[in-house]
Image (cartoon, rainbow, N blue to C red):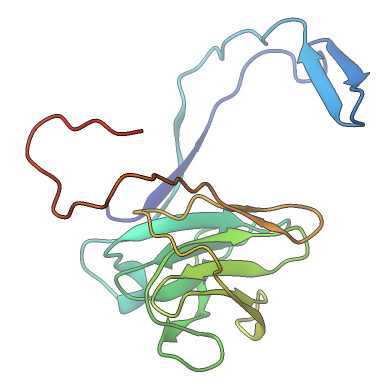
Length: 190
């Protein structure tokens, strides 16, 4: 089966979680310390839900899944970069709708490599084809578009959105001259 699978495991006493110590650090951040890990599950994890097919309807076939998100209602959002689509499935894995398509207009994506769902219910797609962060609501309507100020590209977008609505993304810098393509073998740099 092509696509994604959700697995879970059971076991242990659900009411008796590990002891947690909550500290407030000098900078105001909250730190959680767990006294012990919960006991391992008594049963191995298994597939609870599978979405996708080798053959079938267009919405069932995935080419290159780069991100999967779930909303508080259990709906599943799958971003297929090859199709340039975010497809929505209900908690039982039934197809609901497609939110995006390829293009440069409102709610359209040129070449994205991932998405992240923020706490307000906005899906942010890292569209490196337009050098934009494109925000769409859970119905597919574009709600915001922000330029990417630090140009970057990775196989899968690994950024995050904090509670203040700020985008965070790892980037690196080197003062060495860029050499492309890099020479074969082991290369060092600072």
